[in-house]
Length: 131
Image 1 (tube, rainbow, N blue to C red):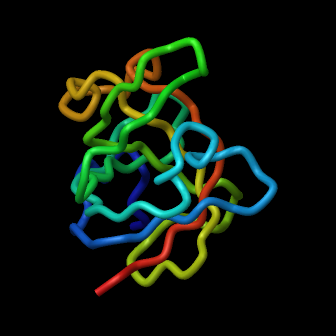
Image 2 (image 1 turned 135 degrees about the vertical axis):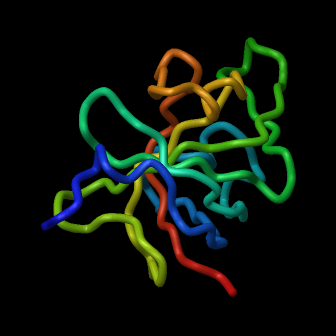
């Protein structure tokens, strides 16, 4: 019997680096250090839309600003999910295109269902597993 997304609430932890994609909106639009960030996928999150999302605990807090008019803030987590149907994020990922959101409220990571109001959609990135 095939497992479904609803059956999978946890995931094996593994480390990734997340790179900005040249010419596409992404973390680099929110901070200079957004060109490449690293962290550990710690948990699969349950989205209301049936898509697979993952919490990434960053190695270093990500300092970002939503606009030139807003003060800098720090995020400890990102939320990522596969960008294209049939190309899910998984162990062994190599330049897998993902959607990226900056977590503005860390309770989003422990909520039973992902609350997108606790994150800012930042665009796309490329996820690659690192050892």
